[in-house]
Length: 307
Image 1 (spheres, helix red, strand yellow):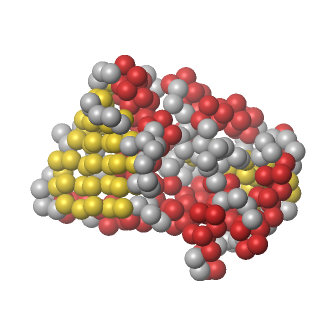
Image 2 (cartoon, one colour; image 1 turned 60 degrees about the vertical axis):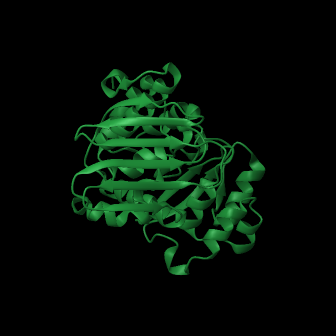
Image 3 (spheres, rainbow, N blue to C red; image 1 turned 90 degrees about the vertical axis):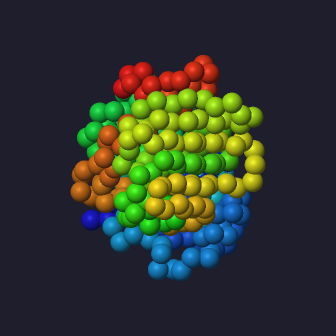
């Protein structure tokens, strides 16, 4: 059976409804060129046709808050049905991709679908509020809900993920990213916590002109995570071990998104969590603890988040 997927967008500065739908459905060259997302068009058009489409899933319905954008999305990504309300997705799709990164909207937009029993993927970050994480938790644990950054699946981190023992004792992992902690910190968190087996214990703000945090890990290592604000493109991870040091510039959005979508679709088909629920809960706890540390200028232990 081919899964019928509904896609929801759009939030400012985030073109994931276009990139995700193009990967799942394939795309119209003319439609994507006219979509208003030239960066997405350029990296998509460089890929081989074999890298598009899934045999067991298709985006069949789309909704955005702007009917003109919805029509553009449908033309660009060969989506047959543009709907004029979120409610119109219910009963017409098997699962939903909420491809908006404005986390303040996630709970109220996703809950009707979760309560109806539909599997849902929610774009990063899931939330920055403990009470919302508590509301989402049962759906994460049942496998009905998946949420993560695509950087969890970055190809540039394949080698350290597979060969982490080669580093010996790791002293420091450092991550740097553009923009702010609340929206973009989850990229670093998901990327790094899917490489190291160590888990975060506490987070401390560092004095800097940008948002900088030191994370104490349960194995004695340290993460330094820097959200550098309005700079040029920057997605970087450095790993410092006693036997090996490596640097990783993360640039391949297409591959990480395709992997993300593969895991979501497989999880829906198998009816099991695509990501261990504990991993998602730990990532969001760290995001929330980091936010609290920056707001209060003090160290925050993850257990204080309370979820």
